[in-house]
Image (cartoon, rainbow over all chains, first blue to last red; front, side, top):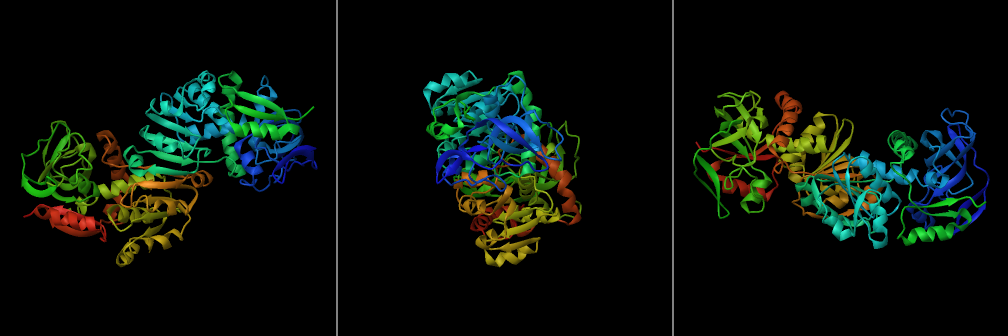
Length: 314
Length: 314
């Protein structure tokens, strides 16, 4: 098979041996694989692939057709359409997926949408609901709302009865984000639209102090991105007086069992919304895998709405 | 009645009109009232009493005998021994307590112990169990462990099957804290005894960065004190990679209903341990209310084990 390959920090599209599915794994013919920040960090050598994932093939999510099954698989068969968060190796013609982490792809969903769904929606679901316990009627702020996780967070909030404010730095993206179900504003103005019960913090240290000042009593903040820096100043008196909770997480560092738990919840709670059209996967671009370098550069520059997804060149 | 009174930042023991119990309140003849950090801050004008509490009489906790009851009270009668966290006004001969926040005093418990119990044990219970979900077998760090909340946290951890490390700055207090059920060490050495699942952070900004580096995956930190500063530096990448949760709280800022919820839980879970002798109230000193100034000064200086409790001069 061919795969996007990190060679001395460059991206090439080159031959590898085909992966072989383990007992509980599916071999998937990849039709689409979203780009995520972890891929850029892995390319820079800052975020090594977890044990068991190929060290030189990036890609944390994929969608494709099952072409072979391990001998202990039970849920999926050859020909099934699946999508999943994986430890790495997704940006390739073939990839293996533990079937306990695989989600069924709704029949009407195009491949590029499916390839951009798992990571962003699993991350946003986990942050908003599992970490922050978001409930209907509450007021949510999503910072850096135009990206993959941001647009997923905005839509999940709106679809579940929460009131969402989207903080969007690029003025030209605000109308598109608002159309997903939020009041979109520049970062300073967004803080004035609180107080917020829940914040999906996708920017990091440059955003967090302002966010703390805009929290409601009992508010919860999930920190999922640090593009705006990791060394944050936190006023502990504000945290105490407003009884706040700050949590952080990454999907990638989790064990297989933990990822399977998230996948089970996403299949139960989020895939039905996707199937019904209550949430969708905004796609900024679909790029062939042999042009991964330019796709990564577009991702890095920001100013995009939603996902950039790689597809096999055909 | 006479009461400890804040007059231009000084403490005097002087006459006030007797308080009258509202419909759901008990009038309590105070036998003991613990000193807490909030009292010192209130004296300095930094922590105003919440609405409904006397603005010039400090005191957040008390124990005493019911001497009159509001017309809608149902749980307690004249002559009952009660203890409670209150919004203020505890350091007086008489105080009113909403009966939904009152706890029964175990029959064998001396008054000074009862007067030093409610605030420290309610705070430690709320932080360790409600906020951090501490469970048996987990490893706990209590920073600033020799004080009222600290000694309560150490004992609650030990009594419920957790493994407790106590960080104690003053060397002469370490053996006494260890005797409450912890491994006691100086703050730097304590960090080396992790990783920790739960941290009761009673020191604040000067302690938190080191604590972050000693956390286990999925660890929870409750920030309850800021004697070591409030402006903390937090590495968000560590928070994300270790999937940490930082929360803060104060009891005093809570509504009556919220305080009643805490009291109900403390009555169910902690008072039985107190009654059985599984936890106790370490008392550094018992001081008459007309010498409140020197008691506050002793509290401020630190280096003490457990509580300083005021009693009516007789």
